[in-house]
Length: 164
Image (cartoon, rainbow, N blue to C red; front, side, top):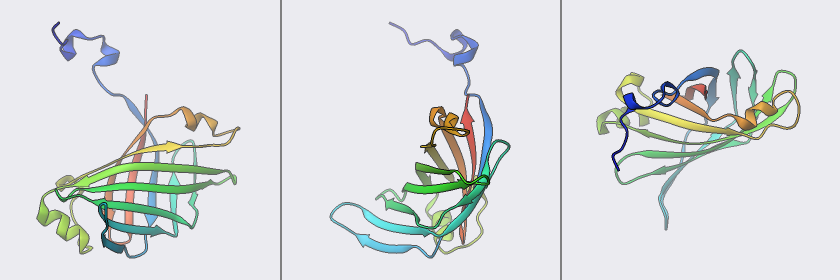
C-alpha cells in the first residue's frame, strides 16, 4: 500500500494551523548543576516568577515552579517543566511542558554562558499541557499547544500557540 503524498490529502490534513495563545516569560535563578547521576546529566532551573499575556488570558507565574533539564550525550537539552499560572482574575492553572533545545555546539556554549544568541541559530520548542479548573478557562484542558522559545540570560521567553 502506497503512502499518500500531502497533496493527495484533504486540505485540512496538509498543514498545521495555529493561533497565538500567549507569550510566556520566565525568570529563572542561576541553574543548579547536579551533574552526572545514575541516569542523565541533570540541571535544575528554579522559577520564582514570570508573566504570560495573550488575548484570552494573562497573568503571572507563581513562585515554586521548576525546570528539570536533562543534558543528553548529543548536546541536546530536554526540558521537563511544571508551572502554576495565576490569571489576572485570580484563577490558578497548572501548566506543564516538555521541550527540546539544541543547536551547533558553539551556539549552545554561548547560550550556557549567558551570551546573546539569535533564536534562528538554534532549535527550541515546547508542548504545553494545561489543568484548568472548571469555569472560565476549562477550554484550555482541550487544547494542544506548541511553543517556540528563546533563552535570555535571566530565563526563557516562549510564543505559545493553540493548534487548531
